[in-house]
Length: 367
Ligand code: MRU
Image (cartoon, rainbow, N blue to C red):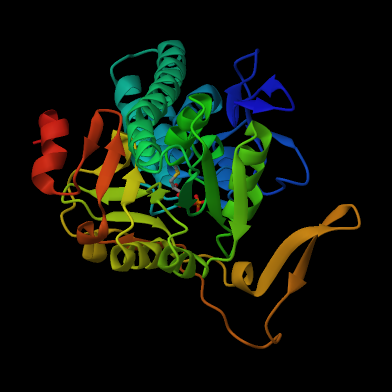
């Protein structure tokens, strides 16, 4: 996608094939910084600190983390032990997005199929690049299928603006290109459909206000940032035609975890008859899980992310304390929306209802 007219991705491999470059998502939209990742420890730090974030991107970054581990394994006395340890540390960097362990496992499996260290390095790099390319294709297809939902609403409204609500950032910054929830929106925009996006600010880290708004702004898509609590009111007043969100982990039965607050949007959507779709690539399904509420691990982050708010002030990024200095805070980063509240999934293979039967029809090889 474009940043100031220049093609950009949130992650890329440097020309020397030794450094992974990432856009520092903690500083956007006010500062544009690129960070170098040279070791698996750098990758783990970037995922934990949310320098990179968003389920598909966490997966791709983890895949490159395995590649960097193979590069660094040259200097280690026991390369295999080093790789095994690196993978397990990578996989536990953040717990909710299943894309991370899926991608790490996939690269290490490929690495195990070859013998010499140089073959391992080459194999890891190629597999990580393959995962990256596949996620780009997946998101493009999610856009292709999802745009039909928007086009249908636009026809019903005789071309009047289609208002879409989204939560968090499930855009290209969270993936590699297009995004998941934003892919149908970008596709609609390209087709000339009149779209407007309600952007939930997404406390505590404001991925909506900072990142989704930045993306849509760069692209020229009409949008309005709203407080996290505004969605219900807007739905009661027919100001939302469609909700599209991303996901960090979905069960094979159709429950989907996403950024904290998503569940409340789904409840409001159900109460007001607003279609609620989850856009996700197959790498976000955890095919072993049946009960999302019980089985999806929910990340709890530093309470200071809730207590302090970060913003732009007099040319620098500043943090300010909101509650009384001694008040405790809790920071649950995700919640699970049960399948019964989800109108459908938008995947790279098409759109389906959030039921075990329909999901498996799209992905029969997962039985
Ligand atoms: O904590 P984050 O910013 O990594 O959470 C991201 C989300 O919740 C996204 O909605 C999700 O990863 C889907 S990204 C296509």
